Image 1 (cartoon, each protein chain N blue to C red):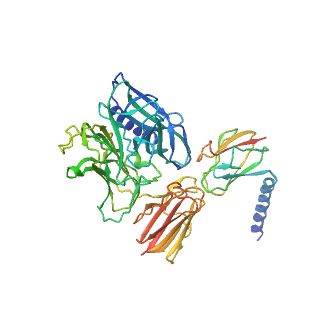
Image 2 (cartoon, one colour):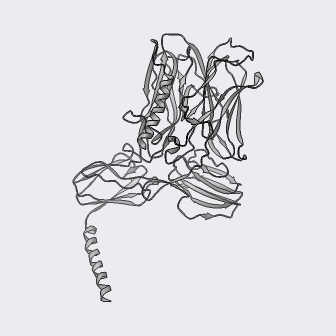
Image 3 (tube, rainbow over the protein chains, first blue to last red):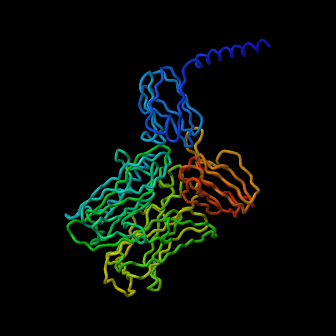
Length: 114
Length: 455
């Protein structure tokens, strides 16, 4: 009994210890639509603080992805039709982001991390 | 693999061109290499640009012409990224010049050269040319299909060889379709014939002028046996037999993945004769397209492009056909037997990549009524999997703001809707039992449907 509850308790504490700071840290949601980020017109700029977790939510019907073309760190998501992709941004700077399926001319955004 | 494929494609084009363009150009011959504006093709996008394009801005005669796609850095693009499905150049003339007309009434402009996957150049015999004026306007009508999930920006490069400062024998280009002057250049083969059955489509074309056919080529799709031009006035003899050549199994057209449509021929026999086959104004030519009739083939084409040297004195008699008439092949590394292809369905996997799929995700809806509705909404077929009894009427309802279509990948009978917008319906009763694998060719990765028709 004690051998069972102790690890469970430990796991609960550990998971608590991990989730609490994340929950406190800033998160920012960005919509991924057909075929745009945030809004249907122009190239939007989103500014967040260093350490923010940005969550791209795939809300369109067509497949899209999130790909950094230039920035302090390069990352990219899988190509998806639904769901979300999260990335914690720990480096300051300007990230140029686009969808490789629809091309930078049609679907791109700027992410500024301060 | 990718590199070698590209190289083979490049060599094929280069080799073909080396063969058709004489090494030592004459003094009065000039070559113009022109480019269209760039086109952005998102993943698996199909576009139908119909735009004005630059001309050589010279008066003279076009004797040769070809076209291909390049990327933003000017490198040739293979079908692994974007395919030039077809392209037609139309001369719209100029305000003070004669009106330009085509073989079909009510259409403006004169199509003077076109090709598709078969990459047939214009290559008029010596002494003949298509006359253009420096003030003429040109439009380009094309279909470009992306074969890749990634976006690509491409331009059409077209090369025009002109004879300047000389007078050549003028040719009139005539576009003769096996399906006549219908709104759609394509027609459907239902696939209800027994194995080995040949589907023929025939149209009689009245010749608008007297002259001599000095060049002829054809645009055909996969599973075609070819097309013929017969002369009813002379006992229905065959003037020209245009045969398609298909790539071998290892050809890029069969290796490129995903497979989104049945690959077309890699070349079509190109009829050439300096003497020319005489035809008379007012006579009819019988144009017949032949396809495999045992399987369904949506949206096939059989379009002959003939170039008639304008000659009012062309003989009336049905004498022997010109001895110098011959068939030129731009490629010979193929087969005349159309390969049997079964198109797969494709879908986006959880890994973010495109895979062939057996059927789309989702539970099959089993319907027992005599009619059932399918919604094309949110870039999906709903339901994506459907089971119906034989003789059930299926109503596809188009609910999206963008165009969609219902196209058969494989199945016992043809299903092929036109490209349709919001508020339209396409109705077909499925009488033949079997498995119908369907997709929207404008959204081939996201819109798939499997309908099982129970016996």
